[in-house]
Amino acid sequence: MTNKVCVIIGGGSGMGAAVAREMKKRHYDLALMSPSKNCEILANELGGIAVKGKAENATDLQGLFNTTMEKYRRIDSLLIHVGGPPKGDLLEISDEDWITANEMVLLPVIRMSKLVTPVMQSQGGGSIVNITTFSAFEPSLIFPTSSVYRVGVSSFTKLYSDRYGADNIRMNCLLPGFTDSLDLPQKFADMSVFKRLASAEEQARAAAFLLTEDSSYITGQSIRNDGGVTRSM
Image 1 (cartoon, rainbow, N blue to C red):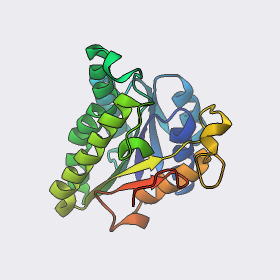
Image 2 (image 1 turned 90 degrees about the vertical axis):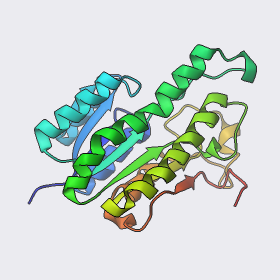
Image 3 (image 1 turned 30 degrees about the vertical axis):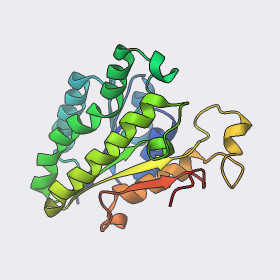
């Protein structure tokens, strides 16, 4: 029996690595990408494959796709988890940094969707999960470019789910709160009703739920896993 395949962009450390470990527990074969050699180390540990590259680089994304298809001949699940885009005082952020943020946050989702959708259509379905942030729907001046472009990911996610739901391809966003994969001061932990940071493993279990058939009737959603930080209902 052929294992299902999960591609993880940002799969070298932190939440991405935690998702890789969780999907391996669910017997998925893995294809990982990160800017550092961490993805190669983790892929070797988990019996997967890795391509060193950056999410904002279209050539790197194409290389990851090509390598995955050459090795596995299928893609069932895709996780896109990118780093934080440039920050700064709202009107002091340069045009170049706004463009960089777009290339880091939104364009990888669009580019990878173009690559994997025909594959998923031919297989009869699939699941795509975009990890963004709790501030997508409650914008924060601490993270201006992230707040702007990550809500764009949620908009694209809804449009994609409308367009490709008939093909049994799902797309959702996971909006994590402050997580222990980052070195954060206690004040950020105190924003949660639990007065602690989420663990990367907690975020990974939520992502794995969305990446697998466990969530087969959920699509087009932006699901917060933020420990109660946001107030909107």
